[in-house]
Amino acid sequence: MRKIVFPAAGMGTRFLPATKATPKEMLTVVDKPMIQYGVEEALAAGLDDIIMITGRGKHAIEDHFDISAELEANLHASGKDELYREVSRVAQMATIAYIRQKVAKGLGHAVLCAEPWVGDEVFGVSLADELMISQVPVMRQLRQAHEKTGFSVVAMARVPKAEVSRYGIAQVEAEENGLYRLQGLVEKPAVEDAPSDLAMIGRYVFTPRLFDFLKQGEVGVGGELQLTDAMDALAKVEPVYGLVVEAERFDAGNPLGFLIANLSLGLRHPKYGKLFKDYIQTLDI
Ligand code: G1P
Image (tube, rainbow, N blue to C red; front, side, top):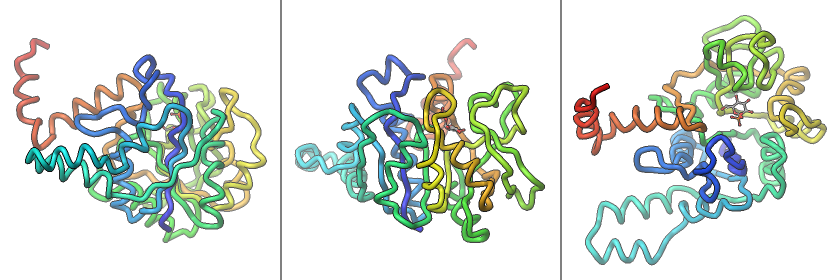
C-alpha cells in the first residue's frame, strides 16, 4: 500500500471570507500550510504515492509542493541557508499527481475522481483540515490495522454528544483492542439519531471495492455524494473497521478549531514556543 488521496477541492465555506481566494488547505498553522502536515504524516507512514483532488482556485497547492527555482536561487545566493533547505525540502518531499474535480459534488465524488489512478489497490484517504499529532503517524496506525484485518479501516475518536452532527458517526459492534467492526455509518446525524459518539476523523484506508459504491451512490446529506454513505454500503458486504487512534487531534477546518490548533502547536514550536508562551502570560485573561 503506497497510495493516498487528499481531497482538496472543497470550497471552504466554513472559512469564508479567508478562503475566497486562498485554498483552505493552504491556511497556515504556525509556520506551514495545513496540507503539509497531512503530506508529512502520509510520508512518515510510507504512503509516498500521493494524489490530490483539486479544483478551480487551488493552484497554490501545486505551487507549494513544486520547485520554485527563482526563490531557491535567491535564498541560496543571499546565504539564507536554513530557509533555502526548508523550501527545497518541501519541493522534494513527494511526487504528487493532481486530478481536477470539475464540479463540487461532495467528498465521495472527490474520492471517486481518484479511481483511474488508484485502480485495484488498497489506498488511503486523508482530509487535510484534520491535524493529527502523534508518536506513531495516524496513517501508520490505520495501515497496521489494515494489515491485521485485510479490510478497510477508518480512524475514529469519541466526540462530545453536542458535536455528533458535525461528523460521520459509526454504529459499532463489540470492541477489541480499540478496533470496532462497523455495522453502519451515518453522515452528520441529529444528536437524537446518532448511533454512538464515535466520529470519523478524516483518515481512512479503503479496499478498492469502495469505488463500486461510490459509483452507485446517490446524493446524500447537503446534496452531495457522501463518502460516508458509500462506506455504509461497503460495510454491508465486507468488513469495515473503526480504529480509535492514538493522537492529539485538531479539527482545524473551522475558525475556532483553527485558532486552537495554532495556539496549541504554537506553544510547543521549537523556535517560537517559548516566546509565544511568555507573551501569552502577559495577557490579562
Ligand atoms: C467530512 C466527512 C465526515 C467526517 C469529517 C471529519 O465532513 O464527511 O464524515 O466526520 O469530514 O472532519 P466535512 O468536515 O467535510 O463536513
